[in-house]
Image (cartoon, rainbow, N blue to C red; front, side, top):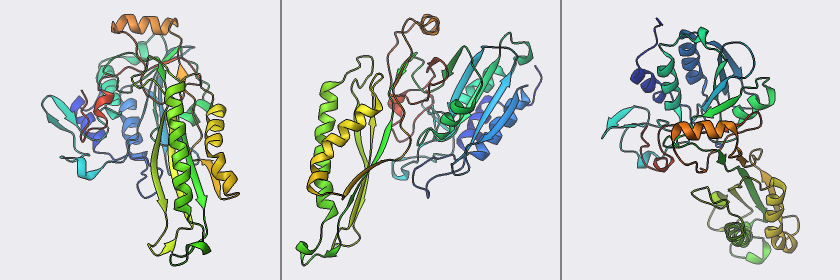
Length: 358
């Protein structure tokens, strides 16, 4: 089919060169509008109908839905357009320039997961999509790395009911049918400021937070010992202390301290039960210091998900891939239809200075 789609490597290079970082901290957060417009133009070029949707309550973020074909069912290929922020000190090359070394491609988002869209476009460049027997949808979402706002908005508003979805997260082409959820929480301690020369005249929020963190660490041990899902590489719910801020000077009693943390629940664990465990762990601090400790959501929570192993989609994909399914800590909203998560690349690379496409 004749079109003006750029060569595969040029598509890949343009995607990596277009920053689309999502972050809770506003100074690091970026719009994905330019990237969405790139994708929209390319999918229109190969015959798709394209809708670009502003995502409410975000910092200028957008989803894109490209569709072709009529009728019920069909296939949805889904991915996110954003990346995490990068640590400049750990990169040995420009994160926004696609580079090749030892048969690997380097750049921010090569594996997770801008590369997925480059592969979709290249696979379809010579296909007459108007002749497909069932609908094909391509979904590109915003803010997967933070609030899941894009996927959440799509799930809440779409009328699509495809037969199945493939989410192109990097799994080394190994089919994945389960993933952990996500709870992102702020623990805030309100103290009372004063001069450090007279500690009795204040309440040091850092000291109270020290007590709270000790109890949160005990909860982390409980989660690790009590709950297991053998298919995951890390088979228990993880708890991470992500950031902490408090105080303004060494000679002042700290008036406020805030901790941001996350928990990754297993499929089958209820969010209410997990929140209850956290409240129970922090209860002694709250009782000793009434009104000084509060717990709140940073983002709406997402439960874990498992597609049943006997589902027809699971059987077909596993047979096709000829791999044994294992779980991975992948995060995506699955409220609409069964999903699967195979793609090139590897999660093991994502903590490296320059993740390759694989």
